[in-house]
Length: 370
Ligand SMILES: Cc1c2[nH]c(c1CCC(=O)O)Cc1[nH]c(c(CCC(=O)O)c1C)Cc1[nH]c(c(CCC(=O)O)c1C)Cc1[nH]c(c(C)c1CCC(=O)O)C2
Image 1 (cartoon, protein in one colour):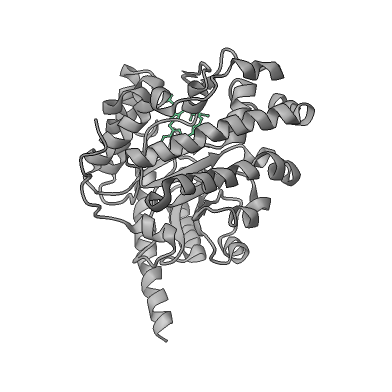
Image 2: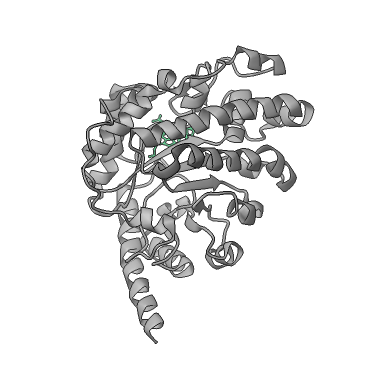
């Protein structure tokens, strides 16, 4: 697979325009974890293949990335490459298993500060993560220009937390012990993860990714003070360095710091075109804080997809009317879609975003003429 063969022309660039702050005919929409277990066709692949086998096999990653695009034909305005944030700890030399029903598991997490010496030095992303680049290039061709392809990484604090906790955790007490007791080693570790993230994102764009998202899924576990010390500087560094390295090839970047509502203003000032919001933000309040500096993405509570048709429609109305439809807005959920959501509920969410988005766009145009 080579990135040198030209990619098919893009037929739908709504999300790229929305991210760059250009006017759109309606708000674009996609959903975090749109390829995943709520789709029966994804579960069928998982019966056959281990999770990381799918990630590591470009044909399989391409196939599942396209599953939601095909099923919700014409309703999704972006695809996101099928992979996981935990491929970066793997590239750093750690073993990560995906245990069905339990989630990620690291048999040998980082326990003592000196354990970071066991991690690979100077990670060559082309050696360790070439399979992601190949999957991106293959998917970009297979998409045939239907929608843009998003690449992603986990943010350094979230990845460090997994590497120290050894998996999910309710309290993050081990990772927090590190930052409080061993701040210097923690910063060393965060910097090493950042360096890999930067090279990995640059490589994803060279392979064909048209937009990038950084997932700080555990941002909200930090106090505002600790977020400013252990998350924000690395998020800022990633945006700055990726853009500098890509130069004229730079693509729009989104930051999603789940739970870090207190940092919205700062997140809108560190070089990302878009900030993704969880459902604890009120749309109008978030717009007032960010003052049009960035595109906002989100933010319906994913659990509303269990709430029945009426609740879904009402929530989409509130969301799209709150954010507006034609400027600096990308519709999404406030976090990943949950595994037991009915496929019809996702369909209704997407259709309603389109319908309300077009209605609001027409109203906005009328208001602008008056
Ligand atoms: C924290 C995080 C992870 N992975 C990811 C995050 C950040 C987003 C978030 O906050 O949810 C990101 C991610 N994970 C996955 C994608 C693929 C693209 C997409 O969004 O469709 C993306 C973008 C696939 C996946 N990643 C995972 C699955 C399910 C695994 C399976 O099939 O067994 C999928 C489809 C596994 C995973 N991977 C991770 C966890 C905690 C789990 C287990 C929880 C769960 O099972 O949902 C780590």
